[in-house]
Image 1 (tube, rainbow over the protein chains, first blue to last red):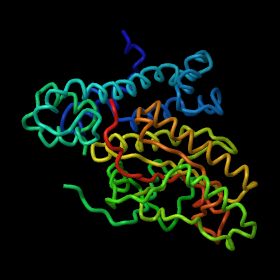
Image 2 (tube, rainbow over the protein chains, first blue to last red):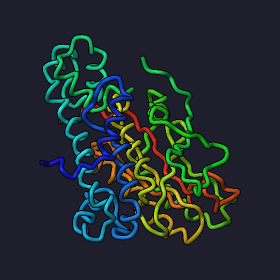
Image 3 (cartoon, chains in turn purple, green):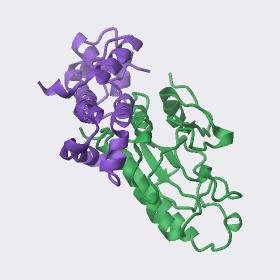
Length: 144
Length: 201
């Protein structure tokens, strides 16, 4: 239900992303999502949300509050694109929960909050759990 | 193993490079995400102590040099040693609004900051203008623009705000002092400020 606004373009881009990478991530990069937003809503943003910025949800709020003034492509896609960005962010947070046991087991000495944890987990990729591996892929951390 | 980088890396991350955007002729390069990561990789173990606050003080102090840009001394700080990239981010005229044409570039910077290689580091976003307009307005506008970039990274793209600082240097740190109104001076720089240490989750 939540993904109803997700239009074709997003799915196609995600498909391309999945095909290009070695593993099938369920998310897309921030660059891809941001590029799609510019592609579908760039003109709308300059017209309807001029002066506002991407940070703090300002552009998203502006687009949501002015749906009737948006081009069809932007109206149909902006919510889905937002959800792709949120999905990537959630996946990155999720890694630390899903992989916590793997961290304790394979990265002794690294405590939660250490920026080296992800690198350690990737180095231990042959032994970390399947769930952790999937979480690393969805977070985009394996794309080096 | 970490690849050792040369001490100075200046990459022009012209990811989107709209044709109208005059990229610096000397440093033009289509830069991939991997190149941003490479450019921002810490090159020295002992990063000199640089902060947004210290740089802001230097920029304000620099405004006492009232002669033409060519006659002003450079900012008294060693930024060259830091791993850094120059990015082209388009802003609306006289505004801190980032144009949608630069969203993808911002997303790429965020992806780089979330790359495992860079996850343990903190970064400084520096805004610069050319010499069009007054120095005071340029200082203020560049700070607002650097803040806008930092805000987008920290909120929309979830880079931990504890890893980010932003400062606007106005026209006080021109890249090309001989051509003070050249496009090359209107740039956003990102510097690696060294390890974050452990950040409480």
